[in-house]
Amino acid sequence: MRYVESLNDALHTLMKEDETVLVLGQDIVDPYGGAFKVTKGLSTNFPGRVMATPISEAGITGFATGLAMNGFKPVLEIMFGDFISLCADQIINGASKYHWMYGEQFKVPLVIRTPMGGYAGFGPTHSQSLESLFLGVPGINIVAPSSYHNPGELLRAAILEMGLPTLFIENKVLYPEQLKTVDKTGRIGNFFFERINNSNKSCSTVSLKVEKEEKADITLISYGGVTLLAVEAALNLFIEEEIKVELLIPSIIKPVPIQDFLESVKESGRVVIVEEGVRTGGYGAEVASEISERVFDYLEKPIFRVGAKDFPIPSSKELERSFLPNQSDIESAIKGLL
Image (tube, rainbow, N blue to C red; front, side, top):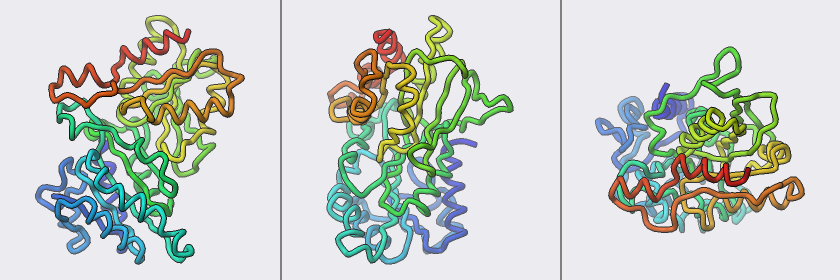
């Protein structure tokens, strides 16, 4: 099953099971079915519960928040994650606070789905990774599945279990990806696979290691679409230089699942954090801070972060590739700590 199919199946199942689940967004009704086809078929199968909205991100976020406050479970699609900035006031000063402002009389089970990321040549205003802008907002979750997770299961958890407004980040490069499956030996391809749930029972962190029983030389932390590059870097370093990497892939980035990372960090003593967004004020900075506060004495080298250059993403695909993280960047960072 592909990433996009997992999301689509989850929405179909949830809408069949629970009549309070509503889906809203721009151009999401059939026959178009959304810019990336995640909502295809929903308006046909559930007429009246799938709403095409105006191009007014702030307005539709406020509308969806009101629905959530009144007993519904709205799933709002923002067509491109770059425009989550237009929703910011409704999220920061509204949805994230109403549960507490009104004496916990209700929850706000709002899920905002949005595609983030580049590598597709969509230009500076349709290629950004802006989820880190919301890391400092209390009262929300940020979920960002990779293809090593089941995005449909995580979407279901976000809608039914989390209770807080949730930003659900879908990296564009992942939509056509086949979801990774574990074979009888406990492997995915060349890697031994393990789920870690020390921080959040609904949102696991995936651990990938080429050598299951041996101590890793380095802990590599990455999430979302850029994990595709991190996996290739980890495998190439093992084949070419016998460097043993433990790759940790969280499915939730806020709150940071720090307890899922610490054992690996204590064992390796070296950490590289990879994100697609810019390093300044990013996810890597937050994780590095959390690690340093808890297990600083175990670190043998400073934590290194890999991210996009601090500059608007160019429209040219060739230039875009030079600004966003690549496999070579990750490998160089790892080798620089050994």
